[in-house]
Structure formats: C-alpha cells, structure tokens
Length: 206
Ligand code: TMP
Image (tube, rainbow, N blue to C red; front, side):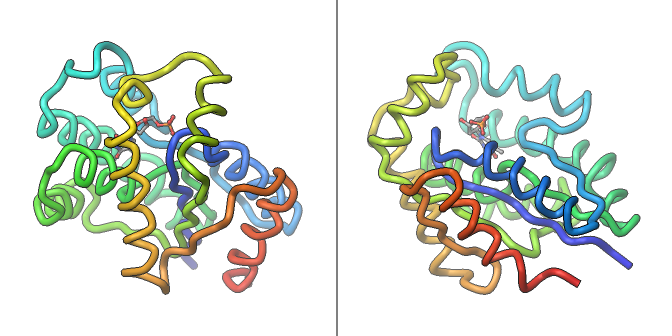
C-alpha cells in the first residue's frame, strides 16, 4: 500500500507551516502514520542546500542556479525521505514543493515553466502530490505577518511585483489543475483555515 502525498503552498506569511503541523496532528489522531516535512529541506543534505537558497543577498545566485539548487535539495528529499515513506504506506505532509518552484523561479524570476518541469522530472522521477493546498491570503496581510516574524530571507526582500507574480502563479495552477490543487481562503483564524484544510483532505481518508 502506498501512502498519500499532500503539499502546502502559498506566499510568505500565509500560515503554511502552522497548517501543515495541524493537519499532521489531525491525521495522526485519525490513526495515520504521518511524516511532516518541508522544502527546501527535509533531509540533512537538503537542509544544508536550503541555507544556500534562503540566506544571503537577493542577487546571490542567478535564477538558473537557484532553480538547480532547489531541485538538488528536492532530489535528496524525495529519494531519501518522501518516496521511502510513501512506499511504507505513510502519509507525507510537505510545506512547499514543485508549485513553489513554478511560482518563485518561474513566474517570479522568469524561467520557462517547461524547463522547470523537466528539471522536476529529472530530480524526482516525476513525483507529484495527490493533493496540494494553496493558502490564499492578500499579499499585504502575508507580508505583515512575515515581517512580524522577523528573519527576512532572500525572497522576502524582493519587491511587491515579484510577490504579486508568485501569488498569481499559485492561483493559476489552482485553476489549471483543479483535481490536484485547492485554493484555501487563509484570511480566517487558524481554526477556520484548519477546518477548510480538513474538508479538502477528508475525501482521501481510507
Ligand atoms: P519558507 O518561506 O516556506 O520557509 O520557504 C523558504 C523560501 O524558499 C521561500 O521564500 C520560497 C523559496 N522557495 C523557492 O524559491 N523555490 C522553491 O522551489 C521552494 C520549495 C522554496
């Protein structure tokens, strides 16, 4: 039996990490064996690559180098954590995955989606989520939450136009792939958003 793969996506400050953790908790309460993880990162090697991706000056890498770093981290994460967990029948809940690459390196940094999808196929042997939850929040609200948290990363420091393109990409993919991707209104309180997440996940339960 293979497990299910659920990803969370969205802009900065949308509450992905909180919601991913709450979903993992709720699935465990339902008797499901869950691996909670994140990208970039999730394995020791991928976490080391994450530091290269999120730390330093915004222009530290070219867009192409950045896309390859993201995929290098993902290749390790998928091969060493995600695929083995799924093969063992566990569910994997992941904070960000390929839709973030299409949004940040594609829409944000103008790399071609076809090239990014090719890199994704190579890095992961074409692994896709069973369900992707895009937490949808007005940019200003997300930016304020991210700022309140402090520790701006390389992407937080890019301009509003960049983050507009990122947000539009997530909405676009939700419309393009309605079977895989659900837009979740993230403007409510944590419990309201968690309830909407659970309604989207319930149909996958055994
Ligand atoms: P976080 O904000 O969820 O911790 O993610 C770290 C940053 O990495 C975030 O600003 C978005 C960026 N990122 C990409 O640019 N491309 C990717 O493929 C992924 C997974 C993340």
